[in-house]
Length: 310
Image 1: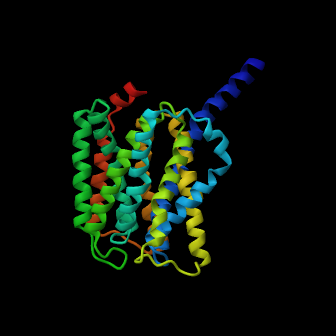
Image 2: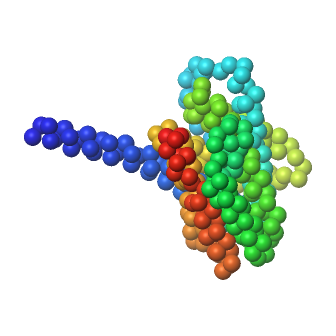
Image 3: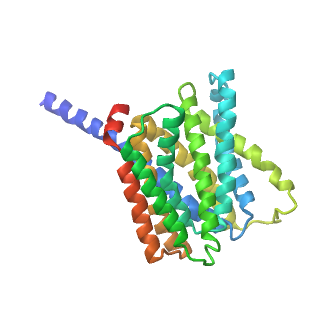
């Protein structure tokens, strides 16, 4: 009975070991998907740059208790330039493009462009890091890119999306910046912890956006409503810290190629929340454009390459 009992316990532990990273990734995708809706909603009241600055300042404050631990990080000269490049790509340029994109397109359409990220990372990893890219991945990338273009051209001008073509293009530029961030994060994480790098990212972003308070075109309200404060706190604590923390935990337990697949769930949650909270909707042709994007992403996931990496 003891042997059977121990075997049952080991089985439960093994199951939990594979389940927890999956749950962490799923929760992270829900949080990231909600960020598009939360930011779009916050823009009704506050200047987009103020929203970005607020969330990054809140996130930076969340890392204060860990300063003593961060001081011991084994930083070398070779890490400084990539760290600056990582922070410049995301959140600095990334949030500039995304904030501008969400002023021109709907949260649902913008989130669909995020499905291009795993493919952009695969292309960049092949070109910069020398990783193998299969023909299947290239074909999948072309299909997904065609779907994203179709999604953009099929967009209708609405109050939520006054210029979807421009907005979706700006969101694509945000994904290019995210690709640069991921490549440099992958390089830096060989020597430095992802948690520390997330803190560096938030602090650099806060310092980058701090001067926006001095810009004459940025209106700083004398008072912010409770809903505005709540959204900024949510974005800073649950998205900038929570989502990245959960994603880093998940990616530390499962292969990176498998982890990247979860990113494709972001638009699913965004579309649902966008419909419920903002009243957004897709046109008939945009729905099929989304299907084409997903087909391209699924096709690009080469199992042979995943097994070799794993």
